[in-house]
Length: 341
Image (cartoon, rainbow, N blue to C red; front, side, top):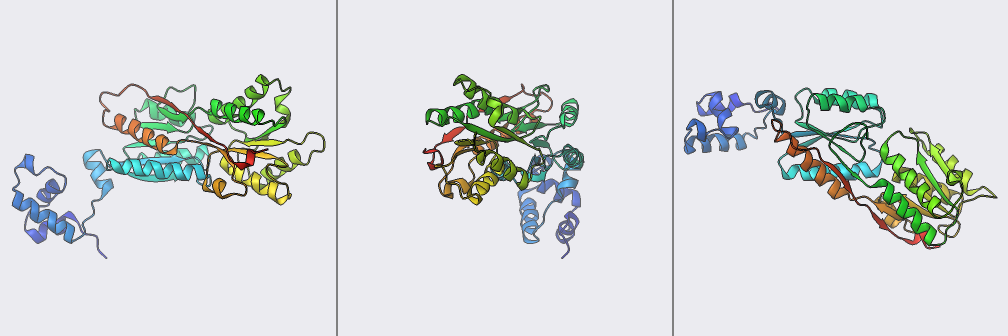
């Protein structure tokens, strides 16, 4: 089926293509086009289901009302939900989202940014993978509107919206200590990203403050491109240790946490009787799990809302760039039966 063009509308009404374009782009009044003509153009455009070519429009006006969202890992439930919140907030301002997933690859991220910079988007919201510092520096240098979400690079001054990962991890570990758990393990991923580093440091600081010696003893760091077998091997090594088996485990991402739970259940261990569990993020699976899993819930709606607002502020004030925004939000610890030891 042929797509309706501006020329199709112009020919049917016997007017110029330029006139139709002015009406549909909201410029009729300044060009003194009558309301009667405007109504005819708009009515016929609706009747023919006219859809503007956003790329062509962007080339003409320099604005596409589209945001490029590059998330880090589509397989992680956290990013799926965050993407949905960003899309909802953007729609409130008449913006659409083009989704990309870098799969935690700096090479993928670079390709996606280069593609979207070809007049497709007005700005970016990015969860940058490790090793992508040069890409962010390039965006900063070119004054391309962007905001980082979930993680950032401390050495680069940029706009970002994140949570206080150190405090969240510290308080979750302290909660386990106060519940009487003494051997608390942490299963995390190897990353040069500040969010993962802060989660591990918060865990270790809580143990140090409680007088626990050698907090690295029960820390397991998985390869960054971790697979199910990596998680299973780490959890098995911990829980089947006859001398130093942990009585609680903190998982630093929900992707790792879900795999860890599967491993614990496959070994026929009981939660929390054999080992208590806490995880970052709060996917639906944790609420319906048996038992329900204690979680460090990130404020997804606020992360999405703030990242869109910061970006649109930059887009709408490109000539007079607003002050840099560095926003750190609080998490919410949700205690459930997985930690009722």
